[in-house]
Length: 165
Image (cartoon, rainbow, N blue to C red):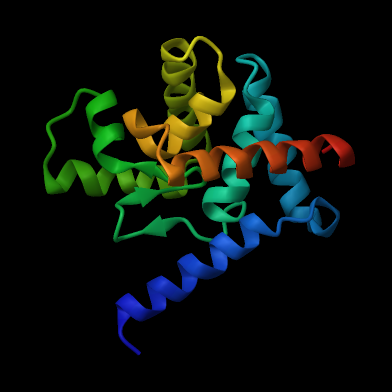
């Protein structure tokens, strides 16, 4: 099977997982990771957003690389955005270096997700639907895809609050 077909299947599985997310089916490892995310996000008021994004984007760390979109890590940060945020030259070496950090360094990945959410939170004056839409679609936060993403994040957060992760 070629790599593109495998990637499409994995992306499809990830989207199904996120769309049909059931907080009652979280494993002990998932809960542990979510509690760690919650703690990191608390200071910024981003705990539930970060947890939901980790669920939606990587199925809580099960899918850490998307070579087609060039998104990496627990929160699937876009590598161009990360390189730009860190004010380093956009070279293959730097993209690889930062992609590896996003995949292997929980703190680094979380700090980047916090920076991204904080940026959009300021831009959209705490309108969470737009913030989540922008996390996915940038300035195209009102696109059909970004609006659906935002709805998925809101739904996941609602479930997480019910089970009190």
